[in-house]
Image 1 (cartoon, rainbow, N blue to C red):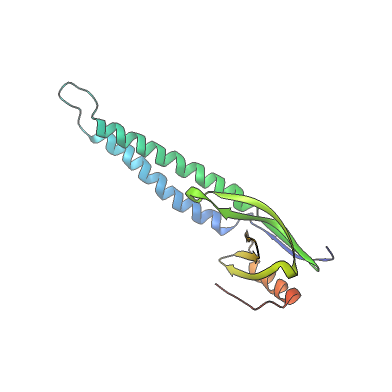
Image 2: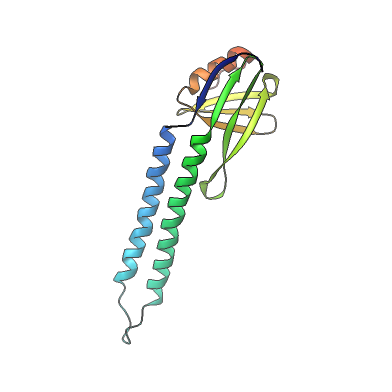
Length: 158
């Protein structure tokens, strides 16, 4: 491993706020559909219109999925971390899956396994020959610079 040079983590990342806003809007659409389902008039016999039931189910499902996804993304983003050593890099990165749910994966790379490194919006993505690892850290640019100094990789800013 060698001497520790720098580290960062996703705790308190601005990406968490961003995703809660996005999923909050989606959850709001779900609530709006639930409210609209109540506005559809009943038939002459007093039965609920099938369209109202459909809107109620879709609205409820949209609301629940949005809140669950936001919570899962928050947990995954907060768990990301990266530590740069003299001889290697290790940490926990995330990947987006279906429904924008993130999943965490551990990685440990030597500098010769890294093909490139990109930073954007307080996140750093490390590309290796077999995978890409995205970590959230407020000091992502500093981490990128240290990796470049250790590896002499070409600088790439997204």
